[in-house]
Image (cartoon, rainbow, N blue to C red; front, top):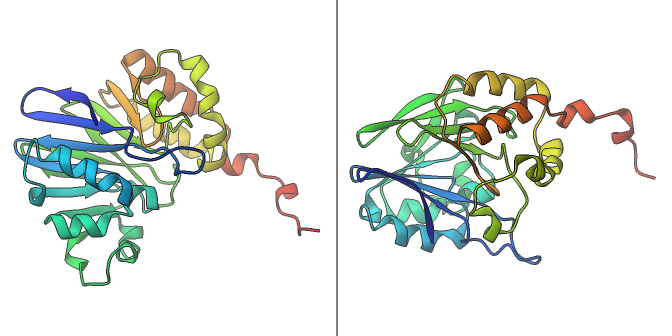
Length: 257
């Protein structure tokens, strides 16, 4: 079931937190997102096959599924776009993804030529027309993928931050915004230490997003940050993290005995 993050009657944003079986024997918890604007729509990081039916049913409240305009993919991991072949069949959508990954997308399809439906986003990002608004693809390279984008909705003032801000919590907790940032950090630390490449790029990201008017930061895993205070707390935390190659030493590169 979709959680409404924004709705002014013409522009609607839904998040989905419970479409994945995140039991101990299931898959990693992940979130999916739908933006509908004046009868047009985009899915952000729609996930794998287990999320397809729930997203399909929800979007038909706002436009026929065949009219889906875009899949906006932050990067090419299976929990991001493994269901892409189904969306190609059900709609006329195009997939927008980093130029670095366009030739990897067909590996999720049945092998038919769909090259005209895969659009590369240049490294510097882009503005994407959707209905009567524009979604901004923001550079987020190495946070965590080499070619990586976040998506900013200036109408809803929501930044969809991909894996940056991910927290490892069950889906029943993921649907609620973070209420106590200090106590939430423990759910993010391990992931960011391993998956975010370096503090250097984290600082660059913080400098960039402080220029935006953001009311919510919504990661692809776990809970969202709602309100200016929570948004600012998160940006400041990211700016100061030690992670990735910052933590590597020779001891991590030894021949196994």
